Image (tube, rainbow over all chains, first blue to last red; front, side, top):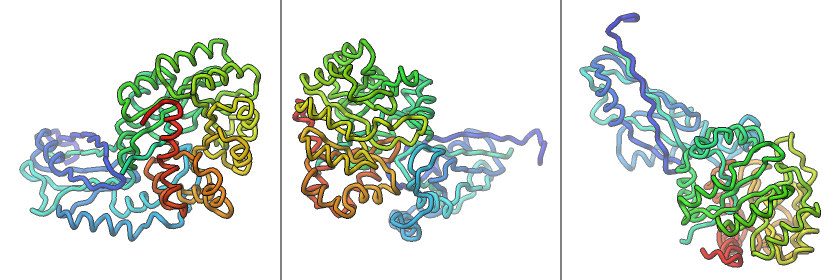
Length: 149
Length: 288
């Protein structure tokens, strides 16, 4: 497929200003809408979070479950713990105090790849795409790349 | 529940201001020494909402003579405050050694209605006890404006900290004993010196801003509650401590959570987070 003149690659940077310290945001409709706009029928879509204290995952949209995800992230990686990262960070010119957010983001991951068929995301009926703020409120960027024909 | 008051928010790292004055980004990185990505003003507002902060005191730093830049400058600061007067209150800045500093100060008082000025011996390179500053201190005292003095550690080692120990403030506080003086960062690491100045001078206040010795909770315990500091905080200076996040150097909610997590009495926590600021602002005829 490489070099195929019919192959299209389209990219969008989606900007979000988050509202809370931690927050799970359903971005499925925005991703599907961009795929439709691109006109790509078959291929893949890559969704990439350009941050080290945010993450992305696929799962079911149910309020209780979304609370459970966040609660477990807090249990597994508590804020009130000892972290080597928590010192003055010369690169940023401020104290680094959010090792827990970095670690939680590693657990979630920073990218997803979803197949496309007939212009639609091949998600199951229950799967949704969730961007996850782990140290907000903040201005965030999510890169959506559609590859296909 | 009434909202808290954040007494130290720098108007730096704000995208809208950098778009107007691109040099501001370089000054923020090289002089103010903050290298994180600029954020829209909306992020500051959401930070305040998330932390239950209803008012933010926004600052300017005049570093024209010392570093060739304003951070961000009084006019730009005023633009933000004009947009959201229900959220922000302004503390401007002047170069106290410039001939026209008094004229600028009059503008801040009369036209912009700022509640005071921020002076930083470290960023602005001057001796706070220089006789040339008398006219400034007299104007502030006569017009019930605050003098906020940047004290304590500055990480940028290209800046001098020889005038950053709060003991130097004692001379000013005694001479101008009706002038309200606010010291930033609890003057860390010179906290015992700060106590000396606050014990002797009832017109001196301190902001709990700064994170120097660990995460916010650890640092605020270091300066407010560890060892005999809890006794001093509760019994001696509880009515003159002001909450400050030092945003954008630290997220506002992290500093609020840190105050709330200390073992200070609930009464003292609310005094630091709100009541003391309301009393101080009221004494300046700035009702909340």
